[in-house]
Length: 385
Ligand code: LLP
Image 1 (cartoon, rainbow, N blue to C red):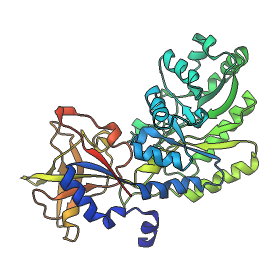
Image 2 (cartoon, rainbow, N blue to C red; image 1 turned 90 degrees about the horizontal axis):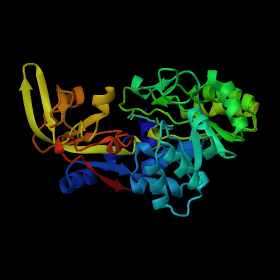
Image 3 (cartoon, rainbow, N blue to C red; image 1 turned 90 degrees about the vertical axis):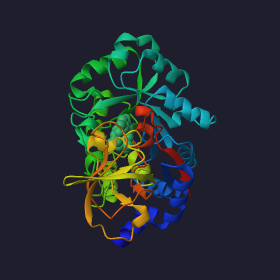
Image 4 (cartoon, protein in one colour; image 1 turned 60 degrees about the vertical axis):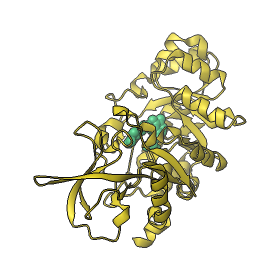
């Protein structure tokens, strides 16, 4: 178990404790990203034998140094807005546009125009654009996002399959889709699916491949199956881990049966979550009846995942790592909402004003979802090697 953790680099922050304490001292509340850990997780994806191309879902963390790291490693970029696409071109003006997959949802017509003009791979996730703006797409090569009919993931908010979800073209529209594709001479370069985020079932991507294959057979001429992201990680040590080798084995079985497809994946969280921590410091303590509150300098304005999804990330008092955890506390921020709790019912040592608090596995959907709610500036970012 211990060796395993070392190998996965989950506890990198224990070894870099002194450096983190200094960053907190100099910069105040900060997200810190460890590039070695980013590279280690990138390696897990690049080692998937069945997968020919990995795209980084940059919505998870759009820090420049992180984007540059993925570029150097040969990853493509999955972008959900023209803003994300333009950011990639700003940083990498010489990038092959076909290394970018633009997968918007309910975007205005103008964003598809821009995507086509920039010659990136454009994905339609609705038949409406083909029905209403056929001239835009006539004769074009496109990706189509299919709704496999079921969602997955760590919370209802992040499930993106099934009729309850606004994403993807449902399979019951396939006949209509096929007619539109033929009428407008679209060549379907790839099929895409993404059923949700934080998935721990290793068979999930193979199941998606099987469904996309059936759709591809009906449409004809499809070369690429993009199986989406959604690869889960451990937010705390009590959670299950995703067995990435089993993901690969199941995909290899699919590949053996269907060797003609190129399989793509587009993880966000898996690649960056473990590499990031959020540092803050204790402001005040409060004992209220049975409840103990440890207040820290930043809250849901920096990290909204606990409030939004009930996410339970490992939280430690970095200043007092060696001391016994002898009390149960809630770790709260300074935001004027009762939901501004970063950790509920946590075993904690006796803490003092000024102690450095670390929230682990916060490299994905942290900074990118932060705001200046209450006109409090969210945590800034630092990258270390
Ligand atoms: N591809 C598409 C089309 C997506 O919509 C997403 C995520 C990804 C890939 C990457 O998913 P990942 O590998 O990171 O799970 N804010 C939520 C997660 C929202 C995910 C949105 N789409 C959270 O903090 O849990």
